[in-house]
Picture 1: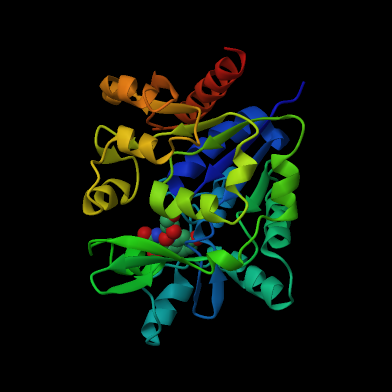
Picture 2: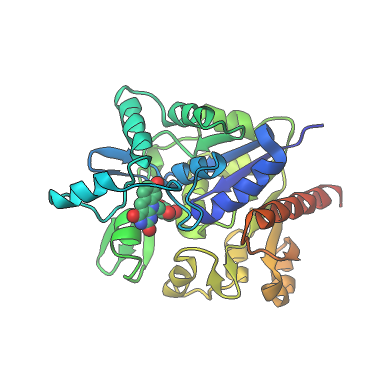
Length: 314
Ligand code: FO1
């Protein structure tokens, strides 16, 4: 029997586990990707998390920075800066092709879902990659008296300002796509995974799409902690937790997923938190949750799928 798996993912951290899962599951993997990080920049529609997943599964990602394309050149960006344009967001020459084609497709009235499916096919990707919604949703970062778009916070300001909350602009107009509904209701779907992505700005936008949460009630949901030993594996998750008056722990992440996740995966470094997480009503898998290389990605993916199977049978 072919078991189908859905993964909810943000950018770099999520894409690593997705890569491991894709190795094991091929076309039986569907990935629902955050679009809250998307923005319009120099006239182009940029979808950073979708592109990170596309480049990673397409085998062309820059492994060191986690986003963008390996062996990229920067002539466009250099000239943009020389002419006084905004060069704080680094658009590589090859990466530009994706943004240009996507912008053209959206301008023609195509759905983001269809555009992404075409890119995935062109890159030889077997897994199904689904934007969380076709309508634009934009994560706004609240700080002090104001708010600013996510990429301004993340890239331009290097996460240096303290956050006090988030607003998902446009979320009330967003809806679960027909492709996501079909995927979530597939009779062979047996596990939904929440990747080790930022719980506030990667996972929360996906869960906030109206109608999404009820689609997560049919099969076991397993979340993998993005926090190991009090630190985010990647990005500002731990810093955000502290600024939001939460301890930066795997347990605090598990608490956010209480009532939603049936299982939670943590690192050996956080093993002492397992009983408290189990008291939230989840089973816990303690393992090596850090993905240093491709072998780790596949190992963690396999262990997580085995864990999911044990929950169904046990
Ligand atoms: N991240 C950066 O830290 N600096 C950049 O200049 C940058 C450019 C960029 C261009 C295209 C793209 O698809 C992603 C890019 N990212 C960049 C990554 C992105 O901002 C973040 O990884 C995600 O939004 C967070 O998940």
